[in-house]
Length: 109
Length: 113
View 1 (cartoon, rainbow over the protein chains, first blue to last red):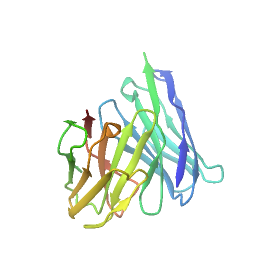
View 2 (view 1 turned 180 degrees about the horizontal axis):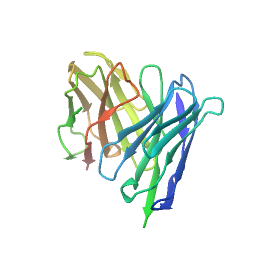
View 3 (view 1 turned 180 degrees about the vertical axis):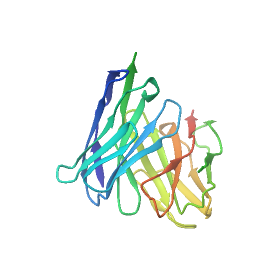
View 4 (view 1 turned 120 degrees about the vertical axis):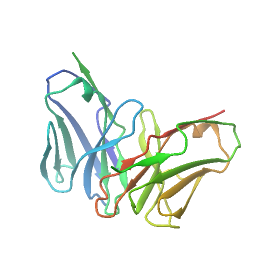
């Protein structure tokens, strides 16, 4: 199985940059996914890293280092609508996800 | 757009009742999953299925069972509901080609009294 650790909460102002770290201990690790969940909403897929390095999708980027068992999600040019919970999830070769406990991002004006 | 629907948004049941939660996806996905979400614990996998009539236990299967008679439908069954099963239940689906991307339903908030 896998276990993933991420901070419980991060607070930042609009326009700032936030980095959410995720460390994992795994067996059968295949890649790292990130999901966003607004209060009362369903989790939605943000990004996936199968290989080491940086993946960029608009204002969001995700990074993976397999040698360090570490990844992060970078949120740039923070907007109020980015206030949400963000989950890292380890993927195995069958597509099964093991989620971290989630990081609540609070964006203040 | 992928759509995953769940039969109820809110449900209130009594201890000992049998509870059925239904999930339907319209994108012909092979894989379907049931999670429960509790504060501070993230999403925990209860059961999953990679094909019709096929099921595998997740991390917390105790007290639950599932049924997948048709590809688009995955049901979660609480045989005898208990108060510790009060939670948010989320269904998800994914395709075999892009297994890292799961599409979630809106969730069912279940309260067991």
